[in-house]
Each structure stands twice: as C-alpha cells, then as structure tokens.
Image (cartoon, rainbow, N blue to C red; front, side):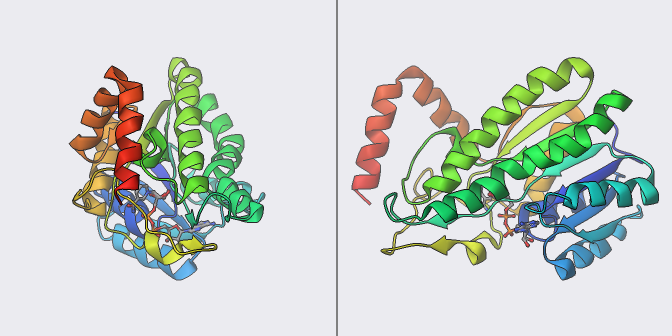
Length: 267
Ligand SMILES: NC(=O)c1ccc[n+]([C@@H]2O[C@H](COP(=O)([O-])OP(=O)(O)OC[C@H]3O[C@@H](n4cnc5c(N)ncnc54)[C@H](O)[C@@H]3O)[C@@H](O)[C@H]2O)c1
C-alpha cells in the first residue's frame, strides 16, 4: 500500500507506547486512525493527539480477550468511516518468573492476549480485506520471538515466536490475494510495558537481547511501521544489532545457543 492518504487504520493497544507511535505516524501519513485500547482514557487521548494531524481519528474501548470485541469494533468503524485498510494487532503482556513457577493460568492469559487476540482479529477483519483485495495487517511480535536470549518470561517469548510464525504463514496466504503483512519485532523500546509485567514466584531479572542496547523511541518505531506498510516489507527490526544476531545464528545455530547459555549464566 504505497499511499496511506484517506485509508482507515485500526491500532490495538494504541493508547500507549508503540501503538501510540504507530497511531500518530499513520495519522501523519494521512490515514484515519481508530485507536483501540482496554484503557478508555488512553485510547481517547491518543485519538485526540492523532486528530491534530487533520484526519478523522477516534478512540474505542476494546479488550483483545473479549471474543465479541472485534465484531463490535468492525461495526463501529464501518459505520463511521466506511472501510478498514490497515489492522495493527499490537497488544502484548508479559508474565515473568522461573519456568517451573509460572502458573498455567498465566500462560493461558499471555497466549490469549498476545497470540489468540490476532486469531480473533483475523476472523473478523480478514474477510473485509480479502473482499476488497487490498489492505495490510501488522502484527507486533518481539525480538524475543526471533531467538531466545533469556528464560525469565517464557510465556511471552513463546507467544511472540508464535506471532512470528503466524505472520509468516499469513503472508503466504494473503500476499497473493493483494493484502500485505508486516511483522514488527522490536528490541527494547521506551514504553510503559514494565507497568503490566506480572511476576510469579522468586524474583527474576530480565535480560536484553544484547547488553547495552539503547531503547528505541516509540514514535520512531511507529514511523518504521508506516514505512513497512508503504514498501510492503514483512520484517521490521528496530535495531540493526538484531539483524546481525540473526545472521550469526544462521551461520552457526549450535554455537549461537551456546553463547546465549554462557550469557544468561554470566548474568
Ligand atoms: N516496549 C518494548 O520494549 C517492546 C519490545 C518488544 C515488543 N514489544 C511489544 O510491543 C507491543 C506494545 O507494547 P508497548 O511496549 O507499547 O507497551 P505499553 O504498555 O506502553 O502499551 C500497551 C497498550 O496496550 C494496552 N492493553 C493491554 N492489555 C490490553 C488488552 N487486553 N486489550 C486492549 N489493550 C490492551 C495497554 O492499556 C497499553 O495502552 C506489545 O505487543 C509488546 O509485547 C514491546
């Protein structure tokens, strides 16, 4: 989709961080943006900010775990804006703890919020995009889904690996049908994500993909998403170091894992 002018975009988890960055960048590119968030005030406030760019933006309350939320959102968007072109599935929550101490209920909550939310979204929005033979789906995964560099938030990293697999398979299906797919894999980004981390059992500290990696600015990440939609690019890595690590792993998977084990052991 080389031109976002007049297009309609939905961003879930749009009330903060990367979702906010994407909502503002999409509006700056000329899109009408629907900011969806479980936190109503955040959704309204970001929609208001996005409107300053001159497009028709509004906020809605949406909990990605609610099985009916996407139908309701679709109906509201179609009534107010008449179409949907971009769907950004961006919500992600983190459960931290040692693998044997994280309860099953936490696994289920994280998998539902991070992965099955996209399945719910697909069921409602893909028929529209397929019917109009145009559109773009953006799924927010994480660097932690690309390769494993820690064990302290396993439900999160496993859900994000699944989001990458789902997005790749979706690209196989949708690309020939004129619908683009982007999978955003951020390294550290300066957002509010730490506020919603839940901890189980003994305290743990979380490792970054690479020591000393500078957190990216969420507005800049939003601009990367817009660029990927315009150029129909699949993988968005927010930090060049992530690309280098993927090349390193492809060259020597055993050695790469051994190095990650040494690195977590060394703290
Ligand atoms: N910040 C990082 O370092 C980082 C790195 C890699 C991936 N990510 C991913 O980026 C995405 C956005 O995270 P962020 O860092 O911007 O976090 P954030 O906490 O700043 O924003 C997340 C937003 O999602 C909303 N939300 C939470 N649960 C929801 C639900 N059930 N339904 C609807 N909205 C809900 C929150 O209210 C919040 O406004 C997540 O998928 C996260 O996993 C973040």
